[in-house]
Image (cartoon, rainbow, N blue to C red; front, side):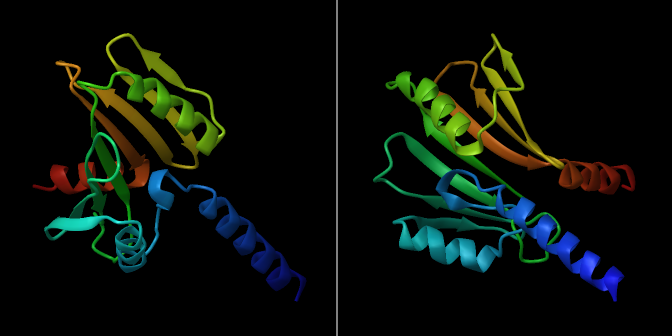
Length: 160
């Protein structure tokens, strides 16, 4: 009986940790794609594209936002990663604002900063966040990643 109680407590602890992996626009790793879709629509996003593994959205009311892409790489109906692109060509201050917002949101310091316009955060477990400035300094891409997804993709590619 004590084992079961310990397992339940461990499960609840893990669930609490997973809930802390909330990113921009209140998206979460392993969040239901359907729930994320409904939440994004409620925030004024509109769906602009759908493929087998991805759904793309835009929201013209968010300054600089080009698009947001949700990924379900395991085809199980859950978010495995997501990417957000901003136009920063005419608004370079947005880069420092987003860095500050991300630091406050995730309560994490930059793990790595690069003079070439690449910043990374370790979000714990197998999760990470990269912020990448394009070579022409016009587009900023934020990519929420999961190493499990990356490892799975590499394994799939090696089997080809």
